Image (cartoon, rainbow over all chains, first blue to last red; front, side):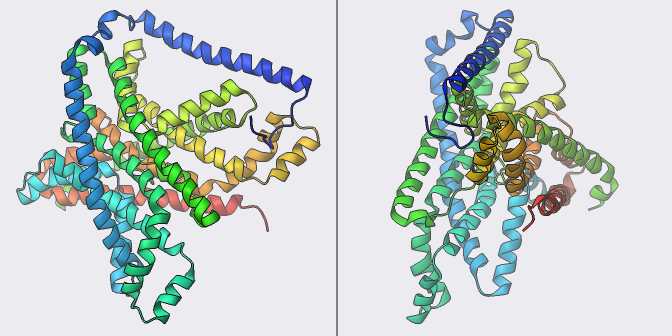
Length: 288
Length: 215
């Protein structure tokens, strides 16, 4: 156990108290668990037929697999588009020209400040009614995700570029590069390495947000899970399984981000920007 | 535009519900999140483990899945309340994980001399945390808490999918009745969220100045 400044190195008396606390904590945990088990048992949530489908229905996994593929597809499309949009917005945001910078700021702040669900509903409801264009749910979801995440990514890029030492910009202009060239050739390539962990955290947020597709009838993992529940009638068991699938994927991504951040810290010292807690917040996040 | 002005009362009623959802869930998440953060820094290993498990699993689950588990899971164990309350429960459980992370980083940001000084005058762990570290930690984390609660404000829109009457639901109702004005209706709902977000941001920045330590 690592040293904490919040409490002393433990003597015999403190160790006894911690032991008592541990036992009480364990009892509390066990008590909560027991209460949950008791509630579940009292409502026959341990009945075998709620679990057997997980072993006897290969179809279930085929459907969930389709849902997961759709989830990943929506996330991948949205990520690519959001990176493009985010880069464009970041260029505008970092521009020296006010007529480029102001609109970029307005667009970024607007899409960050509005619930993601509203953006998705805009594409899903407003396009058919106002323009007579029926967008398939996948497109409505991807476009909504793109606008929100593009705005967030623009801010990540800006933070990355601005965290670089000023000497980089000065050296670039000293050798006669224009501002655009400086950004494109000197600053961005370096900023990408610094902002990689934050980008991956945003990817976790994006992946979680694809589950909003269920609202507009897009057959992603959660919606397929909902359909399965209607047949199998085991919401607790099935939604826990769905949650575990998301948790597994996201933990792997978070681990990747942590690894990249650690590597950066070793390479650059502490100059790499620390990730705020809010960077993972997501779900129509502040981030999210 | 006419549809928006004619039905302004529906929108106002909707956004009042958005605000009350946000407020209740924020209070709940602040309490639960602080408790979990205290568990994560405590000297008691099982509590630390419990706190870490909670934060890691909830942070990596989509809020919509939390909603599904609460709305369809709790009735299976005979917890049956209104959809509004289910929404408050789901939003509280989800947001608490982020509050816990913010509070924990706030605790870590308090200079270690503070905790050492409290210990050297004989305070216990809970006294150190309650009387010395947490008050300073909260003063440090007003900005991250503000973004967490603004995210919460936007997240309440998901309650719309579960039939709760709030801002997005009000918008949807107006669209169903006045399809031709759809752009104006969505724009006014967006404006509603932006205004509430800006107001909360203003409140929090005032709060930040109020709690900033002297010097």
